[in-house]
Image 1: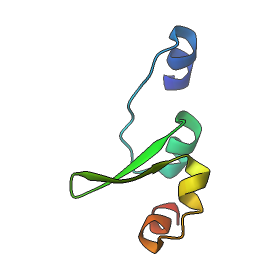
Image 2 (image 1 turned 45 degrees about the horizontal axis):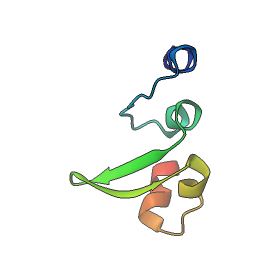
Image 3 (image 1 turned 180 degrees about the vertical axis):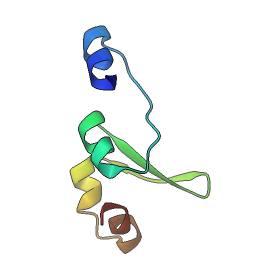
Length: 60
């Protein structure tokens, strides 16, 4: 539904989720927050291939 609305009305959306599969199919860009601060931003593939072990843990 989010994708349909975004496409039909050409709008931006903010999705808050812990589900990386959902983030992959519904966003162009992902930001990861730790203790209230954004620590990394990128596409799903960029973050999944990040060398930072803590970031990789989100994709396991």
